[in-house]
Length: 105
Image (cartoon, rainbow, N blue to C red; front, side, top):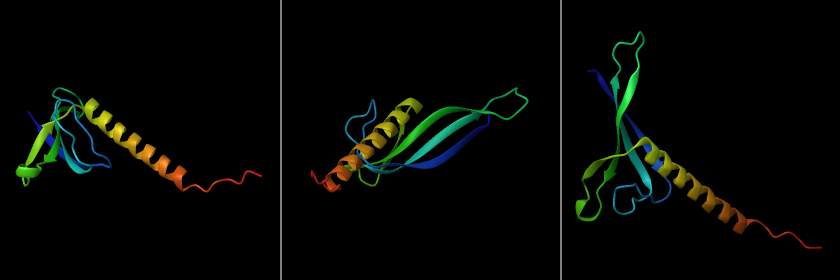
């Protein structure tokens, strides 16, 4: 079985939660590890995702440690969508607060 792994970095602008894990994770950069296996018997090279992990750094007495947390693609997309929506909401409310008042003549 041929397996490959790829790493990328995700940035969360806001604190977020993941299903199945207690507590809130802080905003910041997180390493994402994706493992895939080669599909056999095809006339072309194709891979199937077998696992996705988010690297979470320890806090408090666990500082200096990191943990690979398994995460589904749908949970990851949902967390990223919530983060983007929260960022847009925050931006829209700050833009509204900074917009000059129109003259009511």
